[in-house]
Image (cartoon, rainbow, N blue to C red; front, side):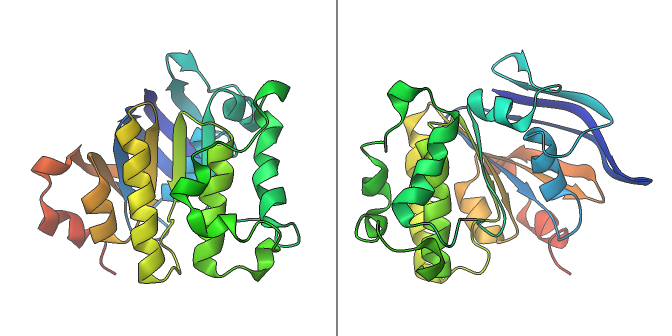
Length: 231
């Protein structure tokens, strides 16, 4: 289980995250909701060690990650699919996937057998450059690259951003399948409410760097949550 306790983060004098706490359990999708600029991506960057925190604790499977570098967190089983995908446009699809080998021991450096069952479109594009793929295909590639790392905690930052509806449904199907395995915790940042609501087992809403609502999907007050997402 991922456990984040009383997290505080600053950008200069700006107090960006204020006492954030959350948990994410294997076999579940935990959704982080909120408008642009409220601290959602900063929270993910803190969990992955890209942005240093002022105080608080981050633990994964009872191991304290707070002082670890990003590559050490990746080796501990965390994988991040960043906002904007950030694939390598001049590398081929297969080369992009192979960059996920970096955190694996030599004996595990292979493409997981079920990867192309999750993303069948990528199998026919292995020799195409990443930059030649559509936005939706690039998003699928970014998720697939993360899965090559064999993560136990998959962190997705707004995977529906700029994606056509048909690919959004495919991504939803993949996330459901990954959660159903029961051995992976999924942390999803999203603004597309229906997508997040339908996937979430648990959720929290952030406003101005603080958690203002949280709970299980079954008890979600949709009207109240939507108020924090509208501009």
